[in-house]
Amino acid sequence: AASEMQMKKLTCIGMELQFEWEQVAAFVRQPDGSLFSWRERFTCFRYLIYGIVNKTNSEISLKFDDKEFYWKQNESLLRRLEDEGVVKLVFPLHEEIKRKQLLRNWALNWHDFTWQPIDEVYSYFGTKIATYFAFLGMYTRWLFFPAVSGLATQLIDFGSFQWLVLPAFFIFVISWAVFFLQFWKRKNSALLARWGINYSFAEYKASANELEPIRHYLSIEREEEKNFDDAPAEKRRLQRNEWSGVLLRIRNNAIIVLGIICLQLPFELAYAHLYEKTETEALSIIQGLVERCLSF
View 1 (cartoon, rainbow, N blue to C red):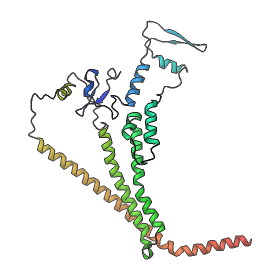
View 2 (spheres, helix red, strand yellow):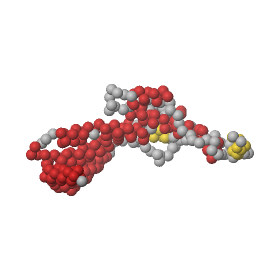
View 3 (cartoon, rainbow, N blue to C red):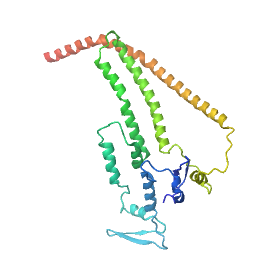
View 4 (cartoon, rainbow, N blue to C red):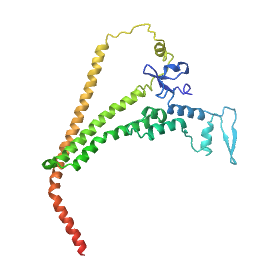
């Protein structure tokens, strides 16, 4: 089914090529050792069951619960059954062995709350769910820092420097958000590269010579040496562009952080100053209102 669908899969040389069973050893396997991921297997299953068509020269009469309908030529049987209401929904069932393994190693893992078998989650549920839980895991771990800082600002008396606590905490939270975003980008890129999603050549056209580099890779035979005379200059150019992009991102982040601080810091200072002066006055006003209500 994968070969008929011309499914693209990552090869050992880092390219996505059309799958061929004769060259199965050249394609990268999943972290659990299987050739296809859960999503790819489900795609193949859907292709097979929806590929059951009427190849006869006439329509076929079908009956279900005193209901008669006709299966037309070159029409998918499952599509016809869905249109007639015989089949309500097509969805995959759980594989109990892997489901129980994930339940034991992931959901019921009480020894380490922060560890997740992301590779196993990716092999079973696909890229979206694995990336979602990878983000939640990292976000939960990083929340430890602002949680501790916020708790400290509420429980510790800083004396005469109390008016600086809220602005400092505000600056810390902004810096934490910037650092978290940058580290998540790195982690996300590492996960996608490990799963082979970064090397996507969806528009790459299949040809008879597609698998020739794989054959060279498998046989480890090199018939000719390539010319790398321009490699140093190209490498320097790529490094220069990469550093330019990094510096540009740092500049943009710094401008955003400074802009937020300049806009928010005066309000935080004013709030901290007024909070100390109005606290006793507010309590006295509330006490007076309560006494008046009780007197009525």
